[in-house]
Image 1 (cartoon, rainbow, N blue to C red):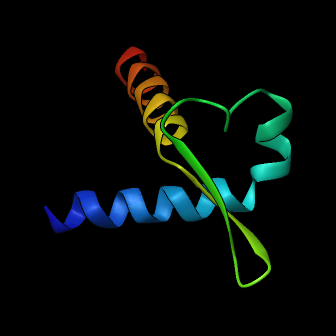
Image 2: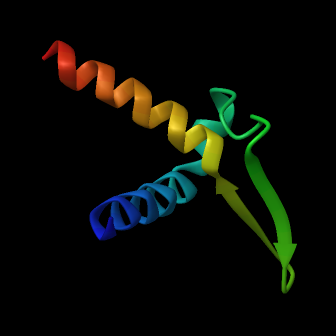
Length: 64
């Protein structure tokens, strides 16, 4: 369970860093994605987008 938590946490950090590029693709506007302002900074938690990207990566891994 710790591995899954760590993998999800790292995926969220990676997606948050790549946010400008991914927002051009339309990710980040799914119903499960959270966006809020905290201490004057915008914080994005793209939970639904992470699940979609994880599913796509899983399909690619199975095909290879």
